[in-house]
Image 1 (cartoon, rainbow, N blue to C red):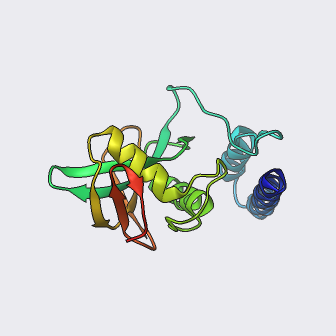
Image 2: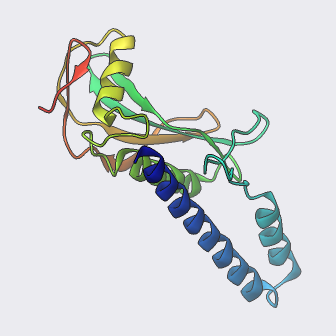
Length: 181
């Protein structure tokens, strides 16, 4: 059953990715009469688009030479912000591609956490909330009492920006273990 669920997620991701490629092709055709410069930009984006792994359904990591988009889930603590969930990083078209990075992170949040559901069971069979409590405990925070989890993103190791996404439930951890509040 787990494998079937993984296959459904992979197929859904691949279908959505292929649909985006079709939309890019339509934009390219619409711009072909506007100016050669715009067409060249669209062709470059299309040619450099990340190739999705047929095995995992994930976009591979990129080298440090390319602009990187990072996403994380965090909570507020007395000392500031505590990172409780990391997402796979992704390449960006440039270090000023904020909308692109925010869109990527929002999509990852929706896909991996079922839009911020801390009770959602991830592909490894562990809830989103338990992953968060384990990460918090690894930083010395074993007890968390009713904290909302926020999504934010950054580009090229720049400042973190709030994405507008908030967990559906507050995070509660007791001795490093997740329990619904």
